[in-house]
Image 1 (tube, rainbow, N blue to C red):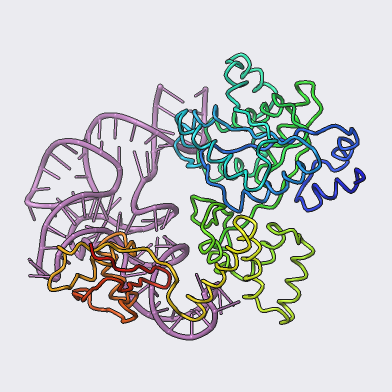
Image 2 (tube, rainbow, N blue to C red):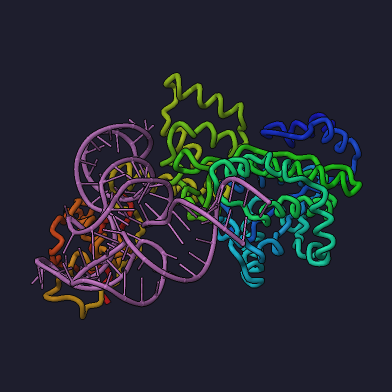
Length: 402
RNA sequence: GGAGGGAUGCCCGAGUGGCCAAAGGGAGCAGACUGUAAAUCUGCCGGCGAACGCCUACGGGGGUUCAAAUCCUCCUCCCUCCA
């Protein structure tokens, strides 16, 4: 590949690159570049949102560059003293280490983790000391900090910003200095921090890193960015059937977006699919099934993808029972004349968190036993081994007398 | 350091002594319709209880009152302005 082709392969689909020209220069150096990616030790469970930058990191790896994972253990230990932001909880050293392990394990599904350099930022932030930190802080101004969209908004809305939050971009920038980053990769929300990194690197007499960002993946709700705390995520480690099901339930509007960011078909392929759907040549559901297959195949296997789709069609298209369902254990001593209270059953199988919720579901007609709808919350139903309990559309359980 | 404003359920936000488990909206859940899509409509939306009901909840503690989210008091936190 010529350097130009490499450039296209690496950042052709990036949302922003500062700058492509500089990256091209670096690629021409003909040495492995150091690609920085910051891992959040408070959120070890990777989801498809993380997969977007990670698949790009893999491309760098393929071309022989060095991926450096930075585990923010130092920053993670400090947390956010204002307690306002849930994104920076305070973590113990053990939690951080455990999370880092989980992270590496899951990241290994996408990248060659053996070839990565994994660094903890306490390694250089600890020895930095107060003097070093103040020196670092002197390289930047409050006015420039406030350029960040998030900060200016919060100033306007009178939402407090702690000084520590000003420190985080600086510290992240210093990470770039410490690992001699050539390129930092992440989501578009990181652009500001990456650019601070460039300034700080210059201030420390280093060539500035290239900042490359990719569009943030929208979550399954179709509006917010995918994140665990919003519950709109599809985890990389999720079971094939769940993964497939979640993909099937995304809205049609974001389908091209998912194709563009999550498959090798890229923006072009996404546009083609969009056009086919628009013209009516392709049913959106089929496009979605195909996407589901691609994703499940990537994180599991082709066979898993196939059976996930078969299962989906069985349960939702034909309304049949799933092949496998968890057991609800019903102790025989709880039975009266072979009958059990329906509310109890619903709660026990995990269909409801509380009896009140179970009652609600029953009243609303969401509960079925052996395909027979139960709407009386006082009902005592006859249960036998193997009876099927259904709550809502997707919770199934099989009665197991114990 | 001084002055003023504020803290309500998952989120936003109304509520200034009883009619408040707390308006309204959003989110969420269920049902209908579908393609487990979106949109729409309907219902639910603190917990326990078969039920009269009981318990917990309006930043935290104490108090006034037959009765407090609402009044008094102390504390904590946040915001704004002045220095």
